[in-house]
Image (cartoon, rainbow, N blue to C red):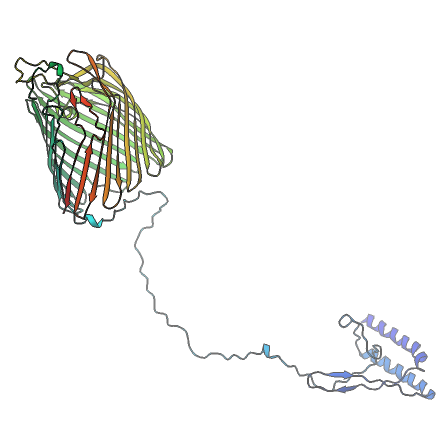
Amino acid sequence: MITRFIYILLLTTLAFGVAPARAQTRQPAQKPVIKPSTNKTTVKTSVTKPVVKNTAKAAAAKSSAKKLGEAAAKVKQDTTKKGGQANTAPNNGSLSEEIVVTTIYKPVLADAVKIRRNPNLDDTQPYKAPVTYTTLDKRVEQNTSIRQLDAMKMPLERDSILANNFVRAGFGSLRTLFGEAYINNGADEALQVGAFAKHLSQQGSDLAKQNESRTEAGIFGKTIGERNTLTGRVNYTRRNNYFYGYDNALVTAPIDPAKQYFNTLSAEGELARNFQDTTRVLTYALKANGYLFSNAYSAKENNVIVSGYLNQTINQFYAGLGASLDVASQKDVAYSLNNSFLRLNPYLKFQGDNYKIDAGVNMVKEFGFSSRFFIFPAVKLEYQVVPEYVRLFAEAKGDVNRTSLRSLSEINPFLNQNINIKNSVDKLDVAVGLKGRLFAGLGFKASVFRNSVSDLPLFLSAIQPMVANPAIPTGNNRFNVVYDNGKARVTGFNGELDYKASDNLNIFGRAEFRDYKLATQTEAWNLPKFKLTAGTAIHISNKVDINGSLLFRGAVKDVNSAGQVVSLKAFADLNGGINYKATKQISVFVQANNILNQNYQTYQYYRNYSFNIFGGAGFSF
């Protein structure tokens, strides 16, 4: 307020001092003329310079000074610049200028800002149906740990839905006769019942009575209940052969080899509890099996085994007990004896993500013609070296092995009479190795082992000279069983490969290498140091399948009729076959054996069949 008063005072003083000097030249201003307009208010100021007389100069000066003072007191001066430019009014911005507005300001809105939308009074809200909810009465579980995956069911193949039964028959060179049949009740998840029969016979042409045949038949059944599963089977097997091997140096006339056959009637039954995916479960199983065995002479063997186990599982901890009673009787012309065992196997098992430990003992009580008691370790360890690929395993075990007439005849059908019976003992078998897979489809297992065996059984030739009458042959080559009395050491390597590139190609093989350190025998009679078995199955298409197998056995040692050690050469036996499915029910096949046509001997003087081929047809219904 004080600043404004000082400013007005200065202007008044200046006006009174300057106005008289300019009164003589100043022209009186006329009122501005304002022309009204419809859109804008235009103000025009027109100034003319009339002729002023000298007598009127003084009065005009006083009047102008008075008006200037009054205007200064009433008007607030705008000292700002408009648009950045100075005030350029015709009277040089004088405060005495008077502007008269002759029209009223009427604001006008442009069309762009006008609202021309009326409210919608219709009710357009959609109808919402009432929603009801049902709660689930289910416990929420934490699924942070990895659970065992359930096995995925294989889809049924259309061609095998109705083909529950199958028969096949064929013939070929070496008077080969072949036939097999399988019959069952079909697809039933709770009950399976069926029967089978097989026969194969061949007759070689290299030696007299180089004949061999094998016939099998059996029935089986399996029923699955809610908690238990019951299985059973009854089989009958008959094998025929002749003692056609002989030393040419001892034969002075044609001979008629003696015939041998083996009959085996076996039965088996098992009761087991079904698997349950729980952390705490008690599992059990009870099994009984036995057989009646006899040959063409006086050898007989009967065996009954009753076994079972109890196992308690708590999370990843297992505790159990296995037990078996093995009762056997063995007879021949020179002896009749009881050869039985009682076994107990308590164990503990621990299993984690990267390891598995089985710790137990195997207690064996031998009774009958021999009475002994043994305690062996039963320990196995597995550790995952490379996750999901390679596992390291180690095991140590032991057991008592019965010298069984049935088992010996299946290995060597040219046995002599009155085989000496003595049970061997695996005192300690130790093995260390790796197993797993190298990449998808290629599985492997490799291990090195060292076994300590007492009374190791071996086959040794028992050649007898011909009697005076050549029509009564007794001197054909037969084999006795001899034992390495004492402790023998067997060290070696086992390797297995299984390559399954796809469902259409599978290649597998096993190699075995053994080195024998014997106690009393000079050689490991008829035991090879190296053995290789391999095979393949190729699915060419839905109609063509190919199979193949290879057996390579290293050289073995035996004794000839003169008491000299002889060596049987190594050999390779290659077999293969093809099966063609002509229709959904009819198929044809061809099988070839000893493709390399090697004239090798499995045992001394017993040559195998040369190259042979046979074929036939099959029918499914």
